[in-house]
Length: 638
Image (cartoon, rainbow, N blue to C red; front, side, top):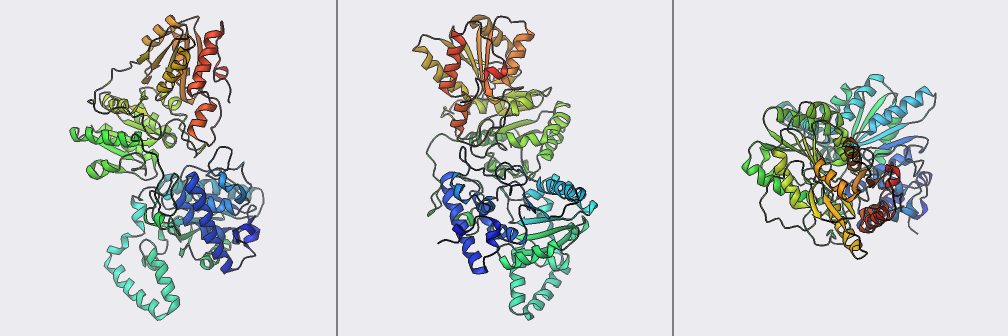
């Protein structure tokens, strides 16, 4: 019988000896590999914290004690030992368990996460609530060195150090986030290497450790794995000590004995403590150890070879964007690119290699990325900020105050817009049309295919103000890319099909879905127009009003929340222009967060597939006098 089969809760871990725990760690890695190779997910982060997870659940008394995982990429081992082993194969699938900590899923998930750098703030809130209520338990935040580049983490540490509240922060130092860590924080622990006094002292320490025999050798190996090596014996955690934290470390994050000892030490300290743990991302699976970037968040793959399993097809929108930006930058020396720790994910890897002096990776710092772009634009540069829709939400004030208010020509390439699938509620890009469309001075575009995305980039460079281009995750439509990059007429929609019975305005690639629906309806004698809006803001009022007066039936389709989205803009435009006797149906996401699942399943659920659009048109055509409200218009959920 496997050891993992006897672990149904953290209390079972406390009865295992060291040999059994080591065996369990190996079995957990096998279980994670088996599931992620089929379902996809965040492999390398979770493989790297198996021993740390076991030590945490042995030393602390969860769920009375609280553990908060920053981002949550590394929570798979935690889920396996907290009663979810029997459902772990459903990870990230529709109606299965989430790939992130989720409060409604288990009492061991005390705080939901998905975005970076939030754990210390939340943990401090738990600690203060504990003290105010006169309760007694430990609060632990586990944060990676990549997440530590986010300013929110330092705001929280500054506050915690000032208050002196009993709190444990574990810095999981695996020397890599999704992309290579950047900035002063990443280099803080290594810069003393260039100091001659440090080098001299390091030699003395090496001699001292050598005289200690095996114990000294063990300490030396641990220190060698940490950024900056022996500098920790000279200035151990100086930065964190200055913030008011007691610093413990560095500790080998794969040494179960050392981990339990340091965590027990941390429990006895009355005040904020930072435990510095050094781990290896992808530990136990060689392909992930050698290429932790690829295996950070990965689709299905073959375990034996490490080869990703993906069907051939058109290039992704991200790669098309990156290649187009390179082509533009060769002609425009004022074009610069900015990303927030997602250079490869946003398609900017090749741009960074060709134009290193014009590429800026700011780390996990979206607010800084936006205002940095504003500063560049104010000095005559043309910055392009490539960022996921869900992460751009984090810089909403900067979009308004620093960019739009000053009408600065910053271009936002908003990747992963719409349904993103298995990552679930925290990562769906379903709010950008609403939060960008509500900001004055912004132009918002959505291409129907990859060729139009390239044209929109050229168009954006001709607009003297902020522009957002939102496009989906995954592969393009296979459209030919042979034509020249030409700007689009500003604010003009594209009529793809003419019909008399109704007009469907479908945002982005949904335009092709609407064409499929039109083909289905044609056999029934229903002729519809299909319009690709292209510009969400400014909306093409002339085309909309003309189509409304001619067809008298309008349907909008968008992968966005209905409130404040494109359908709302259509309704407002018709009302403002007093276009009466028009039946309007708006298809999109109702007032809720969209759970994990396959993107095609998600579109079907909200009637955004060809069948759903066709059914909505049938109802619209056959229902005399029907006029939807936004809540009615979504036609509920399947």
